[in-house]
Length: 408
Image 1 (cartoon, rainbow, N blue to C red):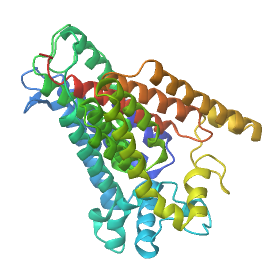
Image 2: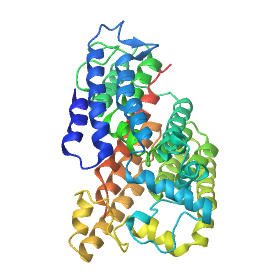
Image 3: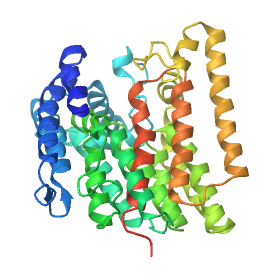
Image 4: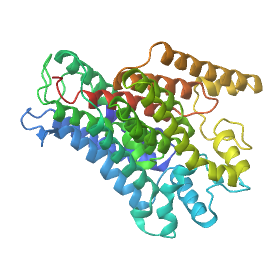
């Protein structure tokens, strides 16, 4: 019901057409899911996955997503990715040498332009196949599935604690309080994989993720790759972790702090050699994927990818939610400097915590990365409330995936 109320507010208060369209459809989907959740336990399950979660996924992700993609209605980021793909194919760089305004800025690293290449290849046609958000969703779901399969399950958590943790995760995703589908009060998790699977479906169907899947998708590939890097790190697979970090690092520079977290995890659990291999692959891979475009167009890339998102470009950034860093930056140059100083200080504190108390499991690493990213988004001179969905998803997803089976 909480999700339905949240979605129902969008048609009333949002100034964005895609948000209003998503909210009107998703609110109905969430209400249907709430009704399904009231069915008897044996009925409200489908193939081992909660039917309520599947209903929410269909009503809040699939149906509004198909409608919005079919109408070509999406957030401005969809157009940005499509234009970046067009520029990459036509000129070899996704960055215009002389942007005429914020609508012509590509504030992402070169890897994001790949999601716009189908649009360029189909020359603006192709329907849903050419829509960048479709490929963002595919990358997100594929990376999430791979992370689910790769993440080791070896946490010595007692059964009742597992049930309580899972309930807190889904309550945080907007599924309300009380016993979860398939459990009773204080119950154990008798079908770990199925219950955790229902939890992940519910998490993906929660409003912040569902809205991104249907209307934008620009942050989803990064989110999936960070989950995959954490899973490989926890499994002691430095090569996979390094490659996942390199791919994420070529999409957005906000992924770069994850290298320190995954390297610290590997150093604590797999040894120094594994940590160095991961760090080397992440750094070399990111450089290989980014440097050619930096050398080709250093000025436009630096202005669009770094200066513009930090509020130092020639035009104001649309990321203007009233977060602490933004409020400080609005005070003038001194306020902007204070916000950046606090941002660097927060990063130093997280880095020091990795040295003094490195994470030793996937959940601890995800929590540390989530805390660092949340702190960065809060203190950055420009940002949006929606950015906070990334750290929340990381922490919740890894918890659910790591507890998908009772420990031996």
